[in-house]
Length: 253
Image (cartoon, rainbow, N blue to C red; front, side, top):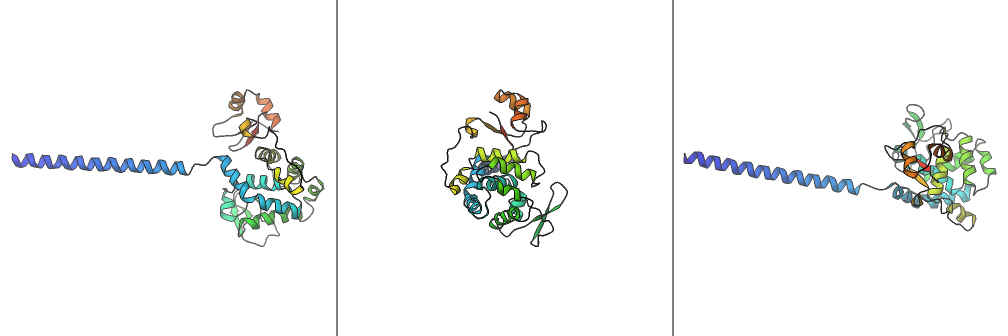
């Protein structure tokens, strides 16, 4: 009888100890996961501002050398590379979504775009991507008409790029313009041209003039949130239909 009691006591102690260790381990594991999730979270604005800070000097230098507005260069880089976080930019240093074409003799990478597994240019570093972007726009006659535009007319440049066939997305010009106006990228055009720059008070998401589309957003929900009609949202953003995408900047006011 005494032996049975001792055995039961020992077993109970073992179970209690084992249960305590398991609980502690799970708790620590949860804390680690929460910490990692928190440290990996960065707002879209922080990502874009960091990207602009990193490449604004290159953009202004290319504006001086090639005549392409720095605002357009930066806006294209942000849009095409997801502010440096796209698969193409991370795996191929391709910040502008430039495809191989027949003249490309460098390294290549294959990526789904308008068609499956299309050929894109791969660069040694980001600087080469920015240099090739400038060369791409200034070589040949396809984009020649752009260089007759004023260097500080980013709206005309954005529309001209789309008209010349740089992108198939009909909203491409509007996306570039919204990035330029949201992040005041035209200030770098002014610096290169030696002009005084005054930021417009209507160009900041902090003032509620734009809305970045998030998961679950619809034009209807956005219209209710900002008390603006769906027709106004479509008109102000030159939308071909009610389709919107995550990360898209919508003009509200």
